[in-house]
Length: 474
Image (tube, rainbow, N blue to C red; front, side, top):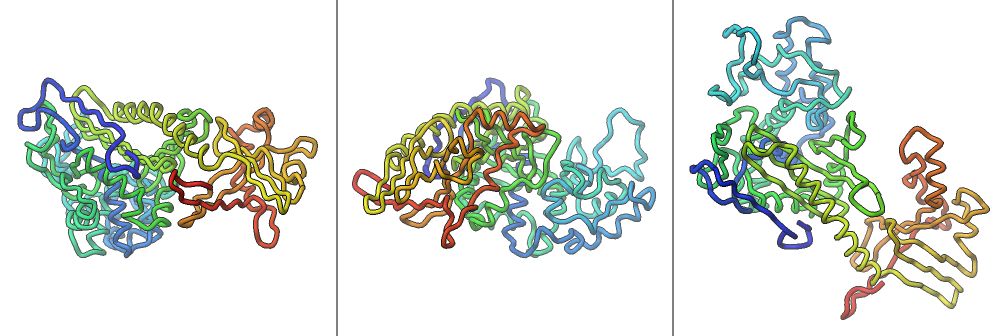
């Protein structure tokens, strides 16, 4: 779904022949599914919307009782005791706290545990949900996995603690806060923080996880929703309805790398980068959050470069968490090239051509090709060939190639762009071959605004947008 449109570009729903009769028999955009860990996205957004915390604050500022649970550890050393004072809210949100994933689930294949020391709660397998008292009485027994900020370790407990922070700073329950600061403003009328009526949802045959309550771990996976509501949720984020533009841009950034070159971690974004979905091969970032809970699987993907939201919700024994990403991946590779081409057609009509100023003997010619942005094929100012005399090329004998990219700065009637100087495809390949790092020669981030004249960058272009009957002209 584009954030600029009222309805999705397309949607597809498949109803299985075998289903639990307690739920719906035919699924559609209003069918309710469990979201599982996609709930974390609501929790982190809810924390940001309190406007009462800094993500740089240590968790012990809001939950000082964490300092005391080290007494439960088997030994008082760095291997067995979590350094809670060094763990910030951001570390918990971005899975960089180093703490374990969950409360203690029933072990399989091990000797029976002593009931006096066993946690005996989880919300699953007939056990009651864990509560706040359970956590503070027992989690101190769990050793850390890593030191804080060493490497990302997926942790449900981290988001559980952030849910407790929300309750501390708002003096409301987690459920009430998320309801009135996110769900109600977006009008997500079929989104629930606890088990809704069976008749609203898809319940897979033999599923036992539809009604499960998660207790203190609700901030990690309790929410139920629909594709329709989640489209509205993603649209609200990208349209800056939930946070200001600057806070949204700051939030939608990676905070840690992983062992995969294409996977980065945000708070709590799972960020995937691909150069395989557009003809020009540039990197596109997908800000996603997935969830898996036995028979339910979900993923939401926000693509800021295209102002797009994608959602996949599934349930049943035939699918898995991988299936949701297959759907998002297939939809992306099919849709983005088409959207790219439509964007180029619009840009061709609005921007491409030759701009002249006879009074100063100045000319600028823009063209489109398969690469990103515009190619500057002629740039003459007061009779001087700017490209041919540029100081920013790799070689004085070979004029650089110049491309124009949007800066995302604009007014109601102007847009700002920046020119980037570089070599040919062969030049780039030859330079990249000299280094062990992929795309090492791509350093445009360090080359902007270098040549300045009277406080203005030589690479700055500002276009006036003129509204006419046939559309916008430049």
